Image 1 (cartoon, rainbow, N blue to C red):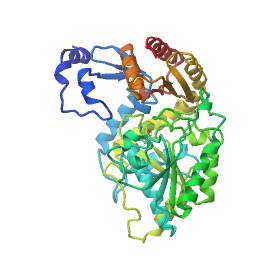
Image 2 (cartoon, rainbow, N blue to C red; image 1 turned 90 degrees about the horizontal axis):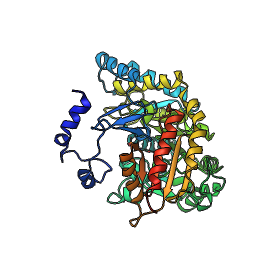
Image 3 (cartoon, rainbow, N blue to C red; image 1 turned 90 degrees about the vertical axis):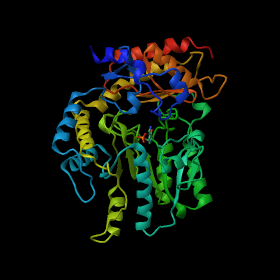
Image 4 (tube, protein in one colour; image 1 turned 60 degrees about the vertical axis):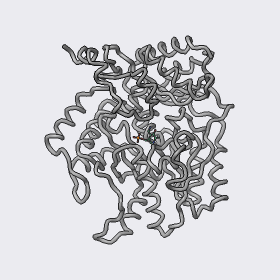
Length: 446
Ligand code: PMP
């Protein structure tokens, strides 16, 4: 019996109430459970052996597709060589090699790498690095962070404080670092802009208003995603990020770019900051660093920030009291090294950039569908706003479930759908994705 047929036979038996699903309406899931039991290439398989096209790279992670043998072999080898050591007081070769390989992809000078276990940990670590940096420079009053409405930066306390999403803040507000918010960058007049919208660079001046209100001497860092990904794919208007960079420079405010989604080729370059030609002081990354095969994140830091913190400590003192048991986990480092090698050998980022034209053409062809109210896209990342159902904020979920039944796995957020195909996908799978999507959308009444 194959694994899949075994799963089908025991389908009901494997379900239980012990597993509490994250970011999921658990009661609805129990009524209508959806499982993946296997994945290969661009496809997931459910217990009945049905293929479901992965239109969101797992969750913006499996850029190279699923089941890559090279990664499995690298992980297997590493587990038999050095399965685990923490990186406290001890190094291991894979950590140095992974940091070096990663820094070769990053913007020049952003080459000091702090490894963590996830995107949320990367964000919270970046906030702590920003605070430690200002203290090392004798600017200890800088405790405020600037974020944006509709921002998502993970779910740890730093990330929740940065969050610009009411649902994510509810129950957890008022705890954690002090954060003030700029407006998000969605403007009605930019609807259906392909690539960067032309209008809206002035929104960066929200940072100036917050500086006037709170004082630059109290602000540590401004944190933005180059493209706000999971909250609907909000592409930065032309000139917006440049203006943020200028204001940060003028006021000694660090610019942290959260590239947990945008990193590793999603925009056609290794990092979106390169696509938009902006040099942040700190980049947070995760997800596709191991192709999603193992949990890992990292914070890339400029030499100035790194050296300021390191040099503020004495010879035998710990300079930065921070780190995780899984920081630079040897097996995750092996997965990262193997992933980064494939990105380079297969020229994956440039190939993703080359596919983008076709992807965006198919994406924007959905304009005119009765249910669709806006479309945004850049690189291999697309967002589609849908007319709300009777309950606002539920349309995305409703459509996402129908898409699953029709053989397509996408992410939804509120009344929007998000598409992020596997970077090494082909034209025909992009066409298949949009065929399923178009068909399902046309069956739903606005
Ligand atoms: N930052 C951004 C921009 C993200 O999109 C995410 C996750 N989607 C995170 C941080 C958090 O990453 P993780 O879920 O790995 O903690």
